[in-house]
Length: 540
Image (cartoon, rainbow, N blue to C red):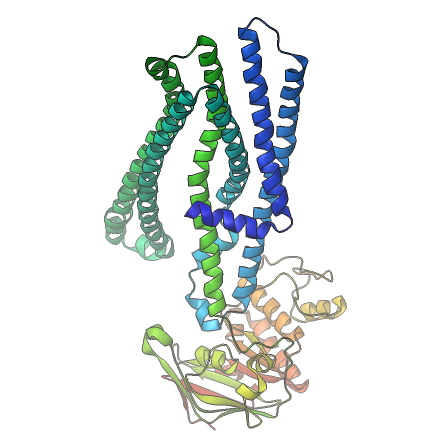
């Protein structure tokens, strides 16, 4: 079944190459068959005391040359098709990831993303090349079997029966190998999870030797031993299968040489001819057998990509707009707003927002203890998190009428877990303007901008924060949301941020909402809001 699905996938994506794959693949086998027939008839001539004729020699040369050309064409077409199909699938996955709803994106296992986009897909390429070999093998096998049937029907039946028996034995061993491989991968995954605990919990383990030893002995070592045993059993089965496969090459030869003469009269010349044909046929036939497991493994990888792509499609943000544009606004208001983490996330924490207003050109600061809901509120305000109840209004209009994509265009956000990009993607800002912004935040000469990219992102924590502020400022959006931006800044940079930069942005007409615990700078804001236990205190 996996072989059929893999072949259908390959041919479906081949497009105009499909005919080239099929014709050149089969033709390579026929040319190889021509070479084998030339060899067989030449052996007959030699056995009769005659030298091979010029015609047989030309047939042999033509067969080898045709095989080389056609086999190369088939293999190149198969490999190119599968490479493009996999890369296109990975590109679609990357694009769909950007369109996934924010909350759903956070639930996706990062390892699954990396495996889909960057995981080794060599087995898929190997299987594509094996398909070209399979087409050739089918053609050469048919030619060889037809020739053997003409020479000796009994020999033909013996070889076919022996090969069928060998194939059944091999497939039985391969199924056992697949089962053990799945168990080994599961055990390896559990062991990897223990290493994750070692890395992320290193500080706690370093501070407590008893905890460290107990964790290593009963978690890391125990899972390692289980994974090692599962891997050993898998390797044992692989070795058994490899030895069986190598040994089975002798079975058809042994059947023709030792069994066939006992049950039917066959001349020495014919027997030698059949042995030659059998030897030349074994390699392509065994290659055809190997296509089955190769295609099975490849289909698992392809199917995983397709399933992941399908899941991402189901998580797509349905409110996206082709060319979003920020609406004008005077006031943003949240009425009867509530956000609760789905599926029990956030330990059941709920943020309640009712009557919040942010006026155009206003500079508001937001304070409150850790876990009070400030960052969650800011994500909901920016349209990243969807309110579970209530509504956001822009000048009295609900966001559902404006469009969430349009609404998000109002905001530049800088959260604690921000990411720095190496360029101002999506912006067309003169390099001189970027350089001035870098100088204002004392980032020159540590960082320069060449018109395309920043010279480096290898910066201190405070420098990274300042560069992130530069990027947010240059986006030119109406509302700036800053979450603890100044926490890692030195005193001089913090003074500049609060006393100079933020007031300057306000004078430019920007609207500011800044999360801060530093009450020394509350005086620069138009008002200070406080959150406690997911609610605003004395909201005005």
